Image (cartoon, rainbow, N blue to C red; front, side, top):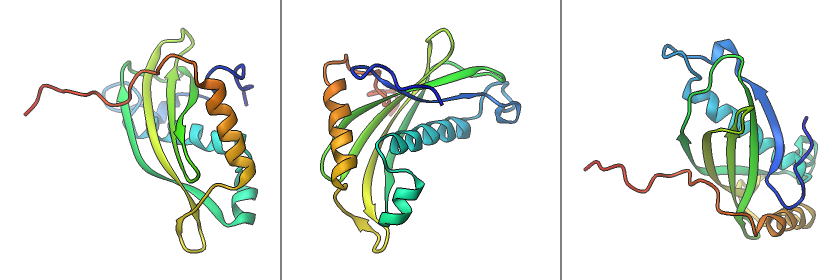
Length: 162
């Protein structure tokens, strides 16, 4: 796994290579695999803040994605190396907004996503507050990234359609 970026920048927690079986009939990566890669980056973020599989199982908690938006900008092709840059956009005691940017080796932005997630007590299941240690880590990351320029939005505001 790659090292995280400097504390004041986007986190670099997930990298992958586009597999041939991920390529669709148009000759580029199918949309389902963008979701998979961004999902893996989200899981890497949870591991990074101390909420790995062992922790989630022991504490009977998890984080559920409530909403996600993806913006596809440049096609990804078989064999292409991809790196995901992650940023905390906002959070509170039980909610989290993450932004992921998919970059190629030339640092071109291929796609972006924004997710809204809820911390959940899996025994109910129902939303609940993050435990102290992960919440402190999220807060630390958000503060460190707070002065960065706004990332490319994951939602286009107007498509010109009726």
